[in-house]
Length: 323
Image (cartoon, rainbow, N blue to C red; front, side):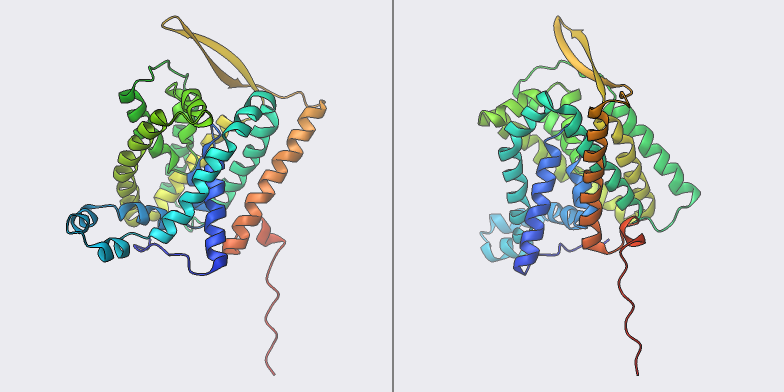
């Protein structure tokens, strides 16, 4: 794993990184989908971790010395600003749309993201070079862990600043992992609807407090994850693939609402059910899921030319033989 973040240089690279940010922001707006998955598939995962790690004690020393040039050179600002702009634009512009779709077209929305996540799992699996018994064990561990986490019953926690801060701290660790969604963690902690409504209504204090928790959490967790990727790359990738596969439980399109009462307050959570295979809704959802699958597969192949599915049908023409 490289230790330097690749900075965008050409207009095409800026646009590609901005669109990746849009995809990450859109993914993190939906419970069950991880922006980290988009980053991993787009090939900027190590760049993102390295960019986050640049906020360290060396940077603080440069700030305290008013070393403006050193600060500008230490942090990959072009990368972070371009990617962050896409993420923020997606989150703030899609909050109302996602809220409406979750309420009115949940099956079709989740069908699309189910296809995205399946394609992401396939794309990430293509990056694993060694299917050793140990890596298979880590794959199973990841599947089981994600499957259990996303199936937890939501709790009714207060929305005070301390709870919101630590919710952000925990959620960002999931958000940066491919597969496990930060939104799902917020849902389990009973904070998702509160934060989504705050974003939609531009009620900034809760969003700022959550963001502060995210900043602290990501500063700690990115270093841990980066160390594992550097020391145990293949096993860590296998674990991440497992997280992606296990998280499919969260975006299964057909779900049944259940209600639990916590401290006198009703809280709704959902469990998976089988679809009605003869219904028109089922087949429309299948088509939408296939579209989602193809979108991610196409994007991954454009980036790496090594997508396990598309490379079966889309190969480079052989170079002409020399005279």
